Image (cartoon, rainbow, N blue to C red; front, side, top):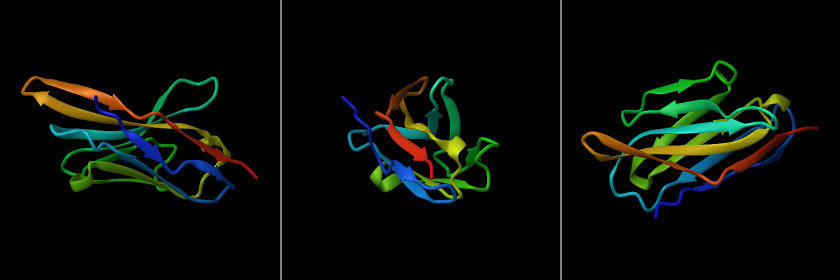
Length: 120
């Protein structure tokens, strides 16, 4: 059973920074892409940032220039550096790791979520 371990959430003032981590210690197959999603109260879950196995990244327009996604393949860990945080960034943040299990199949694993609250 694969379990992702998220950490780094918390309460921060507007303009502040946080760094989220998501480790996948039990995965032995190849990891394809890794993502961060978030879900604010009363809203649907949205994709925030993604990074491929080759290191290509993509971001939601709302976080471009403020958030940076990175990964450490040796540690099976993905990070999300969040700068210039705004109250509208408040949400539960989830990591997703897509693992290739065969030539034609892959599986998504999700973290348990970590709360990020931006408030003065």
